[in-house]
Image (cartoon, rainbow, N blue to C red):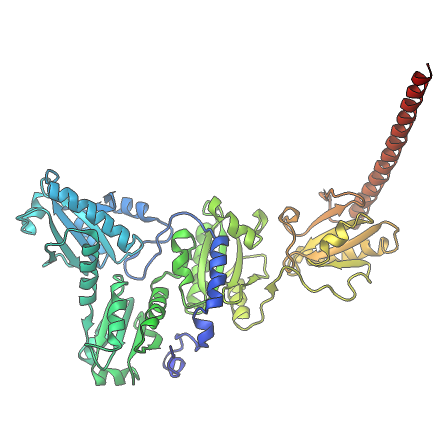
Length: 558
């Protein structure tokens, strides 16, 4: 699919032109995605907030229904005269069965309606299914002139008057097919400039198809697309005077947000691009910040934007609300360029994600960027999560200036020539577990003020032990090198790795030169005492062996 070259000229908010290879999944990238899906077992249940009357991402479906005072039984909303208006305000399409609990046909259809919900998907916030018991809701029975049960009616765009009757459809698959066709028929035919302007300005999000032929050809892709997005208002026009208003010259789909053009997409007469069109629309229906979990994972991977920024945070933390609000503010600045995801670190299902990004308790809350196309990770180089820091992080990433988080930096040529040895992922284990020397290591983050203030102290410590026969002083940037999770703590931190041992001794003292020296000397002395003890034990064992041999020899002689 080709993007129109005039996109950036028409609107500053439109997404910059991208190479097709960067925009859509190639087969090789898809295989990487499948691997990442195994790694990313995100979070528990959550319904994606949508642009049209969707759930707030901090409240799941059950909580939202409770707030509205609506009960749910087997996927269907239990509607009354009091709750029907509330349900109508929540969705574009509300499919309702009017039933009698004593009717066998009513009960069978209720089961099929419940199955239809599963087919459509509960995340489809633009459509809801409900039921009304006419034996207890006499006013609703009279208002909608229910003569026979079961009766199914479809309410469109929150309108209570003249709902559409669904007659003769009694199976789940058929109910969904009928509903999808009604969604398709809801497309607004735009015949004038004024009507088009009003349609666009009255919607938070809208999609308009500009097609020469409204009956066959490329427009058929548009009709198929509409069926999958009941939450999105769609318009259609063949009027040339409307085309000219928006600079359209060939069959094109245009996405509008808050009355502003945010995306152009030329449409080709080829079935394989339907999925591409779906990805584009799906992206714009998702909220600024999405909770990443098993339910939303597939939708997120199908987005045409391959750069994701993740906020790792505990929902139970006191700063949750404020940080998410700040995260949303940054998302507003970079919409159509990055997908903003929130990961709840309280959820045990997120363990694999935390391990993948090397997130420890000390890193929470934290911010990371992931480029799915090249599977590259980036860590925000700042201690505080502020609007300014996150904005700069996003800008540097998009400009290609962000520092990638690698398994290891390259080993510097002069890594062992200075008083403080420079460790990276590639030589870390080789040095600290050499069993030849005692190694005292500083684990630091280069942007941390506390770390930067301690580097001169470690340099002095390195000079003191520069020529020591058994001690090495070293440092490692833990933000640029992957090391085992068991070593990670809140930076800066220090650990002592004894020679001839796989033990690791944490340092818990003051961050001063004298305190460091006292600790290192104490550990050296402990190692010497341990070696002497081991030597004495070996001598004792040898003497015991000799005594036993002498006893056996004497016994044989007797």
